[in-house]
Every structure is written in C-alpha cells, then in structure tokens.
Length: 501
Image (cartoon, rainbow, N blue to C red; front, side, top):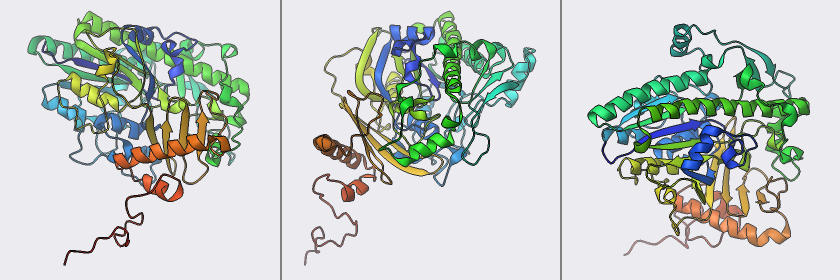
C-alpha cells in the first residue's frame, strides 16, 4: 500500500446523537461504541443545515449551503436549484483523478438529474429520500436469496389539521432481517469492499467507500425483532415534550400540527421512540457486518473510518417529528466518530466541528490539497489528540426552508445559542441553565449584553463568508457601524467617490 489511506465512510440519515451508547445513550450500540473506543469521538459535531440534500451537498463539496446553493430537497422544493452546477468541485472527483477507487452504496439525494456516478462514484443509483424497496437490484437480491417481498402492517400515523391521514411514522415489516433494505445495503457494501481490497492488494489502488443508510429516518419500518426490541414502558420521554411554544416562532406550533403530534396519545409517542431505538440497533448490527468484513480482508491498519449522519431527528422532542425550521440541538448536534490508523483511541474532543469538515479531512487522508473545500477544515490535528490546536470557539449553521422558504441563521457558543428568524421572533437559549431549549430569553433585559455580543459575532462571520443574510442584520439589529452603502446603490454620498478630474 502507498501512504495514502483508504477511507470507509459510514453515514446514516436523521440520527440523534443520544441514541449511541458512546454519547450517553441508555441502550448500547456496540459496534459504533467500539469505533468510539478505538478512535475519536467529537462531542460538538454539527450539521451545517438540518435537511438532507443541502447537508449532503456540503459534504460532497466542502461548501456551506449558501455557497453551493442546493438549498432544499427535491421532494419539497419550492423554487431552489435541484442540482449542483457543472464544474462544481467535489472531493470524489478529486480522489478519482488521484487514482482512488470511489464507491457509494445507499442514499445519494444530492440532486435529481445528476447521480453519484456523475461525481465519480461506483455503485447502483438509489434516487430519492427513502428505502427504494422497488429498486431492481434489491428485488433481484430478494429473488436470489428466496426472501419474501416488502409488506407492512401496524402503521402509525396521526391526523392532519385538514382531517386527512398524517404522514406515515412507523410500521411493522413482514420480512426477516436478511431481507431488510439495511441488510441488503450492507451486503452490497461488503461485496464492493472485497473488490476494492483486491485492487488495493494487487494494484496498489487506494479506495474511498461510502455506505449511506436511509435510516433511521422516518418512517421507521422494521421487522418484529427490532420493531419490538425496546419496551415502550421503558422509554423515557424527552423533557422538551413539555414544550408550549410560548415565546417561540409560530411556525414551530404549525410544524407540530403538520407532524400530528397532539393527535396521538402519549403511549404512541413512547412506541415511536422505542421503534426508533430499534432502527438504530438494526443499523448498528449491519455496520458490524461491514466492520467484520474489513477485518477479514486485512484493511483495518490502512483504512480510516468515519461515522456520522446528515442531521438529527426530533422523535417527539419539542412535540415535533422529523426536522424543520427550528434550530434545536436535537437536529443540529449529531454523532461524529473518526478512527485513523496509527492515531490513539478513546480521544474525546469538545471543539465545535461540522459535517463540512469531513471533506478537507478526506482530502488530507488522500494526500490531496484541501483548499478547494473552502468552508471545510481538516479534523486530523484533533484526531491526534493534539493540545492547543487553534480552533473557533463557536459555530454557525443555516437553514433555507423545506416545505416553504424559511431563512434562519444560528450561532452556537459554549453556553448560548442565538437564532435569527427574519419573519418572526428571534431566539436565545442559555444551554447551561436550559439544555432542553424550552425558554427563549431573547427579549429578557438581563440578556442584552449576550444578545448584542452574539449578534455582532454572527454578523462578522456571515460577512467574512459572503453569506448575504448579513444584509438583513445590517438594517434590523445593532451590529455596529457599517463601512459600505447598505442600499448597494453606489450612489450614497458618504461612500461614492467622484472620478479624478
């Protein structure tokens, strides 16, 4: 092997950090917990935006959503672009050009016309946001192994405000584990891993292999073994289930109605949370099969392993499901694990890092220049357990809408979180006193110094990045004197310079 590392990138969708034993979860996730024990656990790992397509495009490009401009999922797109432009930098094409084999098994969801293959990835094309149980390759897999077809019962859904049936949230799957889409994806990943291992051994070709599960995104559709794995009576409800939405943007109450939370009894919420934990357990088991294959193929000492997700999930927190225009920790703080051969295990980092930072890290592991990933920063100095690594002590996240345009920006510091909502009330949370983000203290007089300081900092970061959201802040908030014409007319007498005679 060359000095360039192989990379196994394990990714889930809509995955809460607190479902991993390594993050204090009440139920062990033995495979992922072992990855944390032998690698580095990042305790403040955030998504750049809590929505699938923009977050995945940020991973691919190393650019924040406002920069790559792929701002919404295709399925609910309300006018944004739906594919990255031609010529867009992507880490996968850079790896390909450097001689890497690149594969992606599972969820793509980075556009509609362009597939993973257009960006240099091997593997079948799985369009859309959910398990594609009608996919020809999956059907062929079932037939080859004499496994029964997809069939569900025990559907869980509420009632929409218009009286119609709510979104499907969970269901019982009448298939054995070996027939689940998760087992199938792990099987295809192992097959690709075997081919890549042979190329690495015989032709010295390094590889990047991504395994992207569609779960534990709702609806949680599981076979008996996992649908009933956790007793709902043992489920501890999130403290923020006491949410009243008082002093919060009204859109949050509307989203709660859209996800039909209050139309279902609390026992149903306990069952949904229990099934969600079962889904996490199923995926942990399938990741274990892939990790066992990597050991069998002798790849452990040459392969860096990532585990993360695109964003989190509410699962009843704040009386919500899914994700949406509410920048709570439940959906913005996510799990992030990284094991690099030769680096120490059991490392825990508290710096604010991002899914975006994976891009530069992957490029550095391949011995490539990370600079094209302009909003990304390599995590390797932190993985080594280094002390005194210069790092920002805050993080900025963004949101642009899903079912409708809804711009938000967030600044998270050690203690506080500021959320700017141009259409509504802004939010400020003291996470030391209120870790569940139930009390919005933005208007509290004693918080004025904190509010002003954070507004200034957010404004500074957005201006430095070139995120034009800052123009709204220029007009509306105390962010300091401007050094430009806010109207952008070029005609302001204070900024316009007459041509020299």
